[in-house]
Length: 149
Image 1 (cartoon, one colour):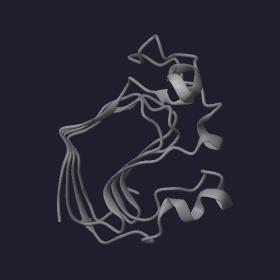
Image 2 (cartoon, one colour; image 1 turned 135 degrees about the horizontal axis):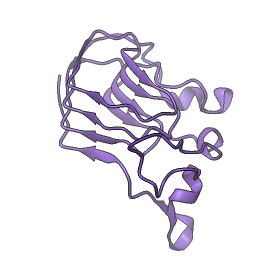
Image 3 (cartoon, one colour; image 1 turned 30 degrees about the vertical axis):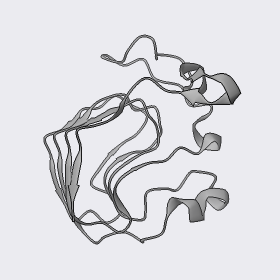
Image 4 (spheres, rainbow, N blue to C red; image 1 turned 180 degrees about the vertical axis):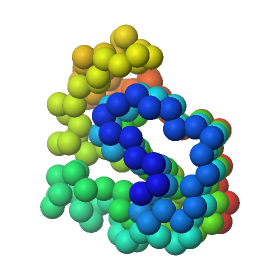
């Protein structure tokens, strides 16, 4: 992988990543809150080309993003803004994938800059439950990103 954030608040901004074998930028734990913005990722076909679904039950959500992605996010708390992925990726330029068995008990850390409404809470506690059990997440998001093959 090119840049990997683990359970933290990190700003991944203004990077050029070329030919990462796996994923260019990987937000691994689902509790990352810092922005991923204005990055340029060039895919050269790296990765196993296997989809995350194939490892879903065997790995219980622990081993993901190996297939080849520009940006892969396990959680929805980090804003992913104005990035550009270009070239060939084993699976896709962008991916968002949450396995509930992996993220249900993860707690957002108290680090400078993290929204105080998130600190000390689990992903489940942050989400707003709607009618029918659907959960809505109002933090983070994918905005203004582009991709070219």
